[in-house]
Image 1: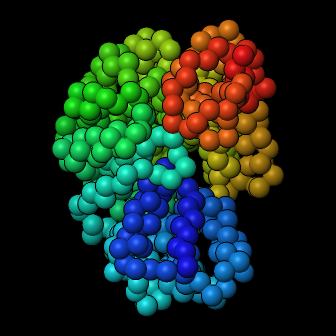
Image 2: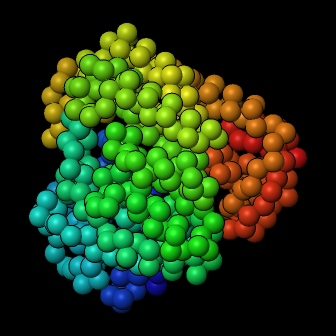
Amino acid sequence: MSVDVVTFGCRLNLYESEVIRQKAAAAGLSDAVIVNTCAVTAEAVNKAKQSIRKLKRARPDARLVVTGCAAQTEPATFAAMPEVDSVLGNEEKLIADALRATEKISVGDIMQVTRLTAHPIDGVKDHARGFLQVQNGCDHRCTFCIIPYGRGNSRSLPVSEVVAQARRLVENGYREIVLTGVDITSYAVPGLGALVKEILKNVPALERLRLSSIDSVEADDDLYDALANEPRLMPHLHLSLQSGDDMILKRMKRRHSRADAIAFCERVRRLRPDVIFGGDIIAGFPTETEAMFEHSLDLVDACGLTHLHVFPFSPRPGTPAARMPQLDGGTIKQRARRLRDKGDAALRRHLDDEIGATRRVLTERGGIGRTEQFTCVRLAVPAEPGIMLDVIVGGHDGRQLLAA
């Protein structure tokens, strides 16, 4: 009887789900379903609930365990569901004995956790790139965000342990590694840039190193230097921007201004001309006027964004933004649609520029690969996942490149 782990949300959850599989095996767990939830939006929580009901119908006799950020922040909500046998917090889910616990709720005070424990993995099933957690938690309190209450305060893995895990992934055949965490640019002494350099110096067989989402205001000189001089550090940065309007950024309690974001992109582009930027932007934050929204809309061009993640604002209970004057749902949806249209147009321009170029891609399942800039390429002939191929770009379909 199998143990299935169902994952929602970020790359960090994906990494931790692999740890959960290891711990479940060590605990001798069988005939169970573990749902690793996300809490970033109300929609993410609702999707988890829907999935729980569906999973229970599919496996009515299996033990159903709910964990992750939504379980940490809303344990009673999931404990009240008749389908759920137990609810585990974000620390408890990584402990073998806790996975066997019979208590309905086993959720500790995440704010009391001060140390990040290493949980080495050999890789993530069905993924061509390796994921490596270097940090967890967040010390900032953006007014819209519940994640610090699901993850706790920032804590980092020692450099030596990061390097050892990177080496392990490469020895297991991974040619690309993604550094992940909640706020990786807050990586503790010696800083994210120095960590990148240490990995590349001490794991020479690693062909590609990629960063997950970063907060540009925390970028240090070592990171700029690595972007300029380390070709194995991939020229793709996904930025936590959230808005292009200074007043909204202040109400969000973000630490950067619109000018800061633009200056960062200009500086990095001078250092690394082939860099591609992605960005998270929230549509319809409380008090956002049409003029304020226009500032977010034109930030796409001002920063030269290519890959856009648009989040229609949804209030998270317990956050200051939930108590601010809300916009109506129709306005939020309309603004999110306009932002997505803007992002689609920016992506098409990038795809147009790629036609005729030769790009080195890392192959994935489903007959696709990813360029160094993380652009998706549909391969002319499907290849085994996890290999490097040089392809000529023959065209695109508006969403991905097409190899000639």
